Image 1 (tube, helix red, strand yellow):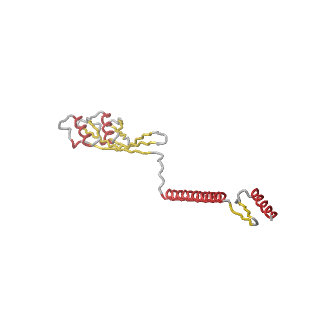
Image 2: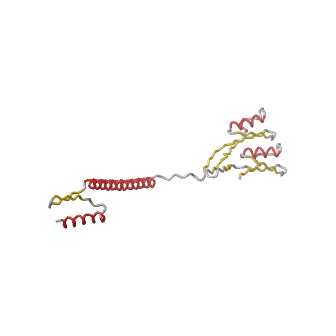
Image 3: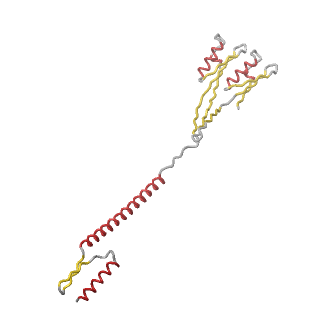
Length: 218
């Protein structure tokens, strides 16, 4: 009997060194009976280890869910930006404006020319009639008027800050030969202005006739 107890004790002692995490046993003997029981402190340790493993499992599942949510958000964002229109800053900004200029002139019976210009036909007509000075020869019906539109364009580059301003307008030129074949020319922003300036250059008189003038623009 003693040999059996000694063998069982040796076996349990060896297992303690080989398996450090295995349960510890309590051996009691009374007479010829032998009882073996598990140490309750070791059993609690095993329960704690089991809880730790469960916690680690939950952490892994939470990490997996976080990654899944992140991938879903990325997919939603990518789908939205594919449908949404792409707005880009323009390379240049263009601002256009227009301005109209009127010119009027008249000749009295003595060939003297009076002219005026303004932003409207009424303004240009009034200035020309005032220049005539009044009298029976300064009549509105004798006025000859024309207009031109000037286009101004401003180009702004947001990236560089450069501002480029351009102006587009026609320039009129007129030519007149009097009765002595002398030639007179002049320019103007409108045909009427160019004609009036050319008649003034001619000096007036019966030899400076409007109907003998020819005009063109650029």
